[in-house]
Image (cartoon, rainbow, N blue to C red; front, side, top):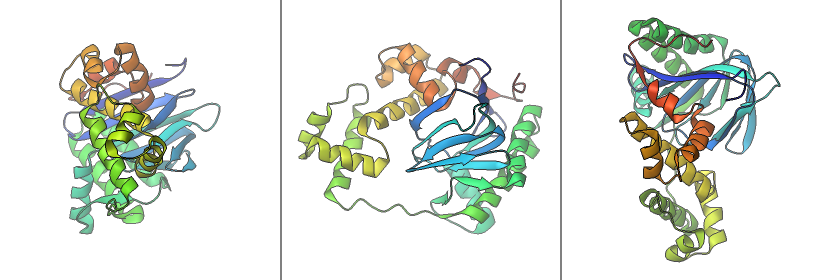
Length: 281
């Protein structure tokens, strides 16, 4: 991590299903990646810039970056001094439950804009962190629900994914299933296309259209996500790297840090606290 950069990625045991990241980045650049969870990132200093689908957007103090599950995005400094933020990553089921409880929305919910200018909501996100750090479970849970309901009410709704209809979309879905099944030993693009009865360039275009990134980028992201699951169960980083198809632990370290924001060892050590770790130094 570059000089002056600091990050802690952790969980509070009394707030299950929610990850927390408190970080200050200057030179950090997140690779295009996705999350299985939602992302609420409250910027407290500086500016974060990130590609969200096909757009480059910026978020500054008092604003929240909102990312839906499985939505490709990046992240880097929007100003020379970088950015500081507190991020919460709630499971999709938590957000769906809050949507049903507070807004009578049932089904797949999501957010319609990647950046929200709402200083009060940003303070709620910061409040979730501080309550967790202090071991105040009631406040952490309450503030999480308040900020989620507020964001859903102003910038959310039911999201109904369209089923793949074209032959290209169907081939992309089939290719994704093959890559998931053969993550540690994936086929070449040419072999994958041949097995699906299409051409490499046609498959490349269809996959990018369907998932927002080419197959090799998607595979790296999927490997990181699966490595996180293994780390969560106590698998040592070197074993996790081999299991998902990275050449060695340093290969995992590089890609894991570019997607998650901290190395896999630090991620695994800081998974669950009864109360939170101390604030950033």
